[in-house]
Amino acid sequence: MNEKFFTLPEEKRQSIINAGYRVFSQNTYKKSPVAEVASEAGISKSLLFHYFKNKKELYLFLWENCAQITIEYMTEYGCYDKEDFFEMLYSGMRAKIRIMEKYPYMGEFTIKAFYEEDPEVRDDIRKSYVKYKSFKADGALNRLNPDKFVPGLDLEMMHREIYMAAEGYLWEMMQKLPIDVEKMESDFTRMIEFWKSIYLKKED
Amino acid sequence: MNEKFFTLPEEKRQSIINAGYRVFSQNTYKKSPVAEVASEAGISKSLLFHYFKNKKELYLFLWENCAQITIEYMTEYGCYDKEDFFEMLYSGMRAKIRIMEKYPYMGEFTIKAFYEEDPEVRDDIRKSYVKYKSFKADGALNRLNPDKFVPGLDLEMMHREIYMAAEGYLWEMMQKLPIDVEKMESDFTRMIEFWKSIYLKKED
DNA sequence: ATGAAATTGACCGAAGGGGTCAACGGAGGT
DNA sequence: ACCTCCGTTGACCCCTTCGGTCAATTTCAT
Image 1 (cartoon, helix red, strand yellow):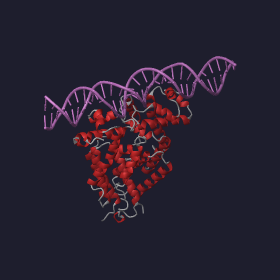
Image 2 (cartoon, chains in turn cyan, purple, green, brown):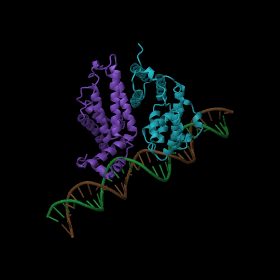
Image 3 (spheres, helix red, strand yellow):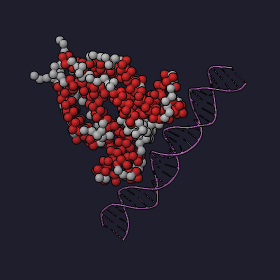
Image 4 (tube, protein in one colour):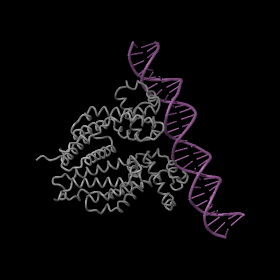
């Protein structure tokens, strides 16, 4: 891929990347027209082929970029170094919302790419995935201190439940782009407050 | 559309329908090849065009069929006539799982069709949607009796929370087809038990 | 003005798309 | 044995789309 791409003004690079995520997230790899990416980014197809030597390279760049972005934001919002469970939840959510704000279709692209079956890219996707897998912020369950929660609570169920509700909410939001960042933050904050109110032990 | 389609053996009709849902759920209307539907259903393209006079007719039939199926299952599982909130949740879930079992891609197709922008079908989709809208099993919130729940609980939040968790779970399941009906039922049952345990007032 | 870099429109060959149609083959009637 | 009907198909048509190239034009710093 052409190094010139990285010297492009932020705005232009952004629009190319987002056009890519949009197109590839709504079509399979094979049926995603490079021309559509170009025109949506406001440049000619020829120029796009000037930055990326072919469709595959563009696609794989976008894929690698997902991981980069995610790690970058997660680090910035301190998702890796929170002690308290709800704190971690909160910062994770904020990171995710910011990503959605800047790259609305990245989430869907990630999933679609992960399950992509086209032999032209499948193996590269798989290979690159294991490389980044270790960055996942797992082990939140172990960090839960049972003393803080209502007695007898099934912590694993609670964790699953919260996780799924968050997924469900994000999924719902993704259906009707563009997203409303303000609303999402306040919705999520309310939800976390709600969870705290029912799951945390009352100290009275 | 050709009436002969309805006299087809159940199995064959099924496979055509499912092939249709699969293809149209993973591509936009325009980029869904009729030939792919046919070959996946195990028949020739010509024969498919014998049953449906063109692509649009096939697509709209599948769309109408979604509503039919949904209403049929919801009725069969008594989703419209349950009094208790958790009972309703349970029967709704069972209906949904059975649908997913028989028509794995119907859910995704419904959403995709709903947001389809292609001028060739958009208006028909919209029009047909309002026709069925009234069948939605709404108003579950009003049916909630606050006395049965823990004092001070925000019922609306609880409702939203449960709804989103269910969505999140179903979405997760849909990513890795084919579905495991047994597992889904037991997962869901456990989740409902969990919700009951934390939201319902303890009578001791 | 000049040369290099950025950017494009026109173009190409291949593939894929919706839809048609003549023909095939088997079941049933005579 | 022959005909007829009908479910079914493969080959075909014509048009569009796609990935990728390239010569030509525009932009811009010097």
